[in-house]
Image (cartoon, rainbow, N blue to C red; front, side, top):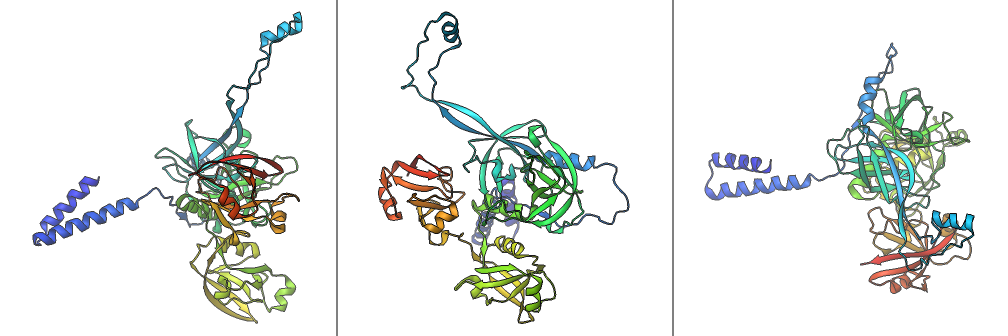
Length: 501
C-alpha cells in the first residue's frame, strides 16, 4: 500500500508543470506528509458512541431478540485468571512408602529437600467476563476480575471467545476507583460490540446481561433498567460510582460482561450485585458505557487515568437549602467551600453558589457532579450554570488535575511510585495499625515498571535492612540492581525484592 501511494504521488507531481527544483520539493513534502500520517496511525483505542435512542413508543412487542443477540454475544468473552506460586517440595512419602509404613511397620525414609528448587504451580484464581471493543484486540472488563485479593495483577489471563478460541491476554491498564480494566489480545478482525451513549437510557428500558456466570458458559438474561446514577459505596470514599441498576440476572462470573439495549449496543459493564446470599436477587449494577469508555480510552492511550479537579467542597441540595438559596428545583449542588488557588477559585466560583448545569447537562447530585468533573480532561474548559444570590449566571472555567487525596505532597521514590511519610491521617485512611512506621505508597501509575510490585496503601518499613522514615533515607539506601525491601501490607509484613536499573 505504501509503494502504491508513493507511485501515485510521483505521477501526480510529474504531470504538473513545475521546474525540477519545485517538483522535487513538492514530491519530498508529499512523501514526508504521508509518512507522518502513517506513523500517526498507531494502535490507540478509538471508540465512537452511537447517540441514537431506542424506539420507546413502539406499539408491538418483539417475539424474539435472537437475531440481535446473535450479533452482540460474539463480542462478549470469558476471562480466566491464575497466579503462579512457588511451592517447596514436601519431602513426604510416596504412596508405596505409605503402604509399607501402615501395613508392615517399616519406617519411611524422609527426603532432605533443603537444596531442592521450589516448584512453580499454576493456581486458578477466578472467572469473569469481558467485552471486545476493538477488532485488534482491546477488551474492557472489571478491575476486580484481573487482580487477586491483595490487589496485585493476575500472573496469567486467558480469554475464551464464543467460537472456542483461547487467547492469552495482558493488562494494558486498570483503575480501581471505577473498577475498569482494559486487556489486550494479539488477534485481528475480532467481533466488536457497538457502544451506546448511556446518558440516553431511561428507567424501564429493556436490557440484557451477557456473561459467564459461575463459569457455566456464555449466558444471556433479560430485565429492565431499574434506576440510574446509583451509588452503593463499594469503592470507598475516593471511588467513582454512577451505576445503572438492573433486575437482569447477574451472578458471580458476570463481572466485566456486557449490559446491552434492544439494539444490541453496550450500555454498561456488569460489575456488582446486592445480595445477602451471594446470588442474584434482582439488584445488579453496571458501570455506564460512557464512564467505561472514558476510562478505557485513557488507560489504552495514556497508560493512566487523568481526572479533572475543581477544588470545591459540595453537598446535595435539600428542600430547606433550596428555599434558603431561592432555588426552585431540588437538583444541583451547593458549594460549601472553595480551595484557595484552585481551578474553582481561578474560575470565580464562590461559597454559596449552587451549580445546576455543566456543559448544557443538568447536575443531578453531588456525586453526579463529581463524576462529570472527574471525567473531564484536565486543562480543558467547562461551562457551568450557577445560581448566586437568586440570580442565574454562566461561568466558563478551566479544569485542574486531580492529584488524589494524598498525592499532592507525595514524592516519587521510584518511576511511577509516589510515597509519603506515614502520619495519623494516612494511617486512618489506609487503616494502618498503630506501631507501623515508614513510607506509605500513595499512588502507583498504571504504566510504572513497578506496578506489579507495589500497590497503594503498602508501607515500606526497611530498605536493604535499614529502617526508613523519610524519602531521603529511602533514596540513599536504594542502589542499582536488586534491592531488599521489608514491607507492611494488609496486616502482614514480609520481604519484597525489587530491581532498580
